[in-house]
Amino acid sequence: MRKTYDKAFKVKVAKDIISEDTSVSQVANEYGISRPIISRWVAEYKRYKNKAFSGRGKRLPDKAKLYALEQENKRLKEENEILKKFEAFVKQKKK
Image (tube, rainbow, N blue to C red; front, side, top):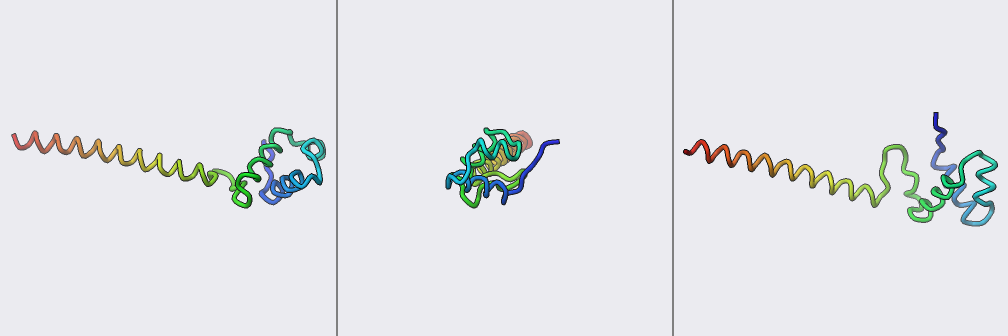
């Protein structure tokens, strides 16, 4: 099973590394976490600050908006197809 870490822990690690209280290597050795994962935490915290580490299944702020627009676009395409079929059905009934 994959080990997970809570938001508070990730924020503390990221802040400590940014303020140079510790290094990525030190944290990796101390907690047995891979360096790329810790580096990703630091990058996410630098980019999103308190909105970082939103949790399982939740998208980051910029990704959430894009996802919502993609879903709306998909829904509108489906509605458009239904309307086209209905229009063809109505035309056929008039004949």
